[in-house]
Structures are given as C-alpha cells and as structure tokens.
Length: 277
Image 1 (cartoon, helix red, strand yellow):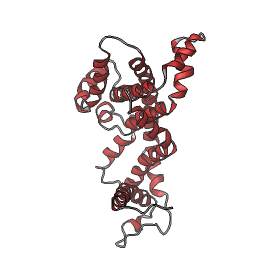
Image 2 (cartoon, one colour):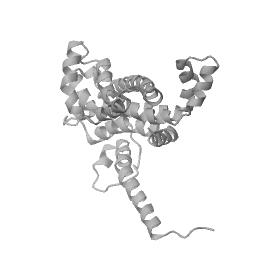
Image 3 (tube, helix red, strand yellow):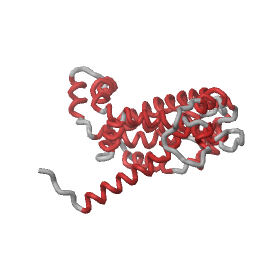
Image 4 (cartoon, helix red, strand yellow):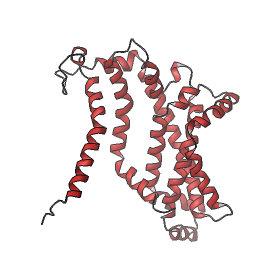
C-alpha cells in the first residue's frame, strides 16, 4: 500500500527539485550554448535546443586557444596531487586510528585545523619556498602547493574510515605472519576501498578546481591549468561567447562525469568516514 505523502514530504521533494534545477540550469545552458551556431547564440529568440549542432566553438577553444595543453596540465597536476595526497593520507589516517601515543588527540585536531586555514595565508610562504627550490612555474611546485590543503582533510576522512575497520582482521593477518605494512596493504586497504576512492576523488577535484595557487605559481602559458586559463581569457575581448561557453564545458564536464561514474564510492566513503573518528 502506497503511503500518502505528507505536506512535509511534498515540501522536501519540492525543495530538492528546485535546488537540482538551480544547480543544473547554468551547466546545461553552458553546454548547449557551446554547441550552438554563433547566429543562434545572439538571436533575440532564446532557444534551449540548438537547431543544428556546431562544434566550431569547442574546436576553436581546444586548438586555437591551447585548451588541449591546459587540459593536459590540469590532468597531470590533479592526478599527481590525488596520488600523493591519498598516499600520505592513508599512512597518516591509519596511524591516527590505530596507534596510541602522547598528543594523539591534539595532533588529530591540529590536522583538521590546518585544513581550515585560509588558502590565501599560505600563498606567500609557498611562493617564497618554491622560489628557493626552483619549483616556480612547474607542475611539481603546483602539485605540492595544492597538496597542503588536500592532505589534512584527507587524513581526517581516512582516520574516521580506518577507525570503523575492525582491528581483529589485522591482528589475524599479523598472527599468520604478515607485517604491519603487509596487513595494511592486503587486508585493510581492500576493506577501506570506498573511503580511499572518495579521498582520491576529493583531492583530484580540489586540484582540478584550484585557481589561487596556479595564479601565484604559474607564469608561462605552457604551464597553465584550465581554471587559470579560463580566468585569464575571460578578460580577452577577442574571445566570443561561444568560445567562453566551450571553455567552461571543457573545464566542467569531465569532473561531472568523473563524479557520476564514482558516485557510489564518493558518497559511501565520505559518509562512512564521518561517523566515527
């Protein structure tokens, strides 16, 4: 028997639908504008679905505006940041969840406090540090900079996730002859895979969307990432509206597909890791 919806349920559904529409409308409009002919974009009669699909804006942005280079830079920096940050977070989160030592609670709280520090406060110290290390205007320097605020939150998430993994399974593996690292690698990590995938995605998206560190560290056009290129080209009067929508599409759509593909891991990993810790 179907349950009759209450006014509260109807209000909740209406709120979800309105919020979803408000979030998706600009993205859908951006993508549709990117594949519209120029004449249709500037037509006084606005239309949702383009009469004909025109790939010239995307082609122009990808080739003429060097977005193929910017896309590759973003992909390399984001992947390297996600791999490095997740690896550090696995070791840090596991240590905080399993080992007892003096100052453990203070250290755990301090890790989260570091994440709450505004990024702008880290910009100048990192610029000076990377200048001394000759890592300015490099993908490595940008990766290290973004990792400073990707690692703390990742450690906190995995700390809570590892805390839910029963320690008995590791103890059984150690009794059978496995080392602590071996038990972590062969027993704990497969169980904690959703949390690890969620952490990897979080770090990847954080690096993909980074603008501030890129603006400070990257100087040459060949090293620019997608957000930095979009921000700089937005002030270029030679860029048409169609090209600008195409740039936004190239920057946004890959992340949307990435999230949709790993949505199950992302939600279960973050929600499970936030329960205990």
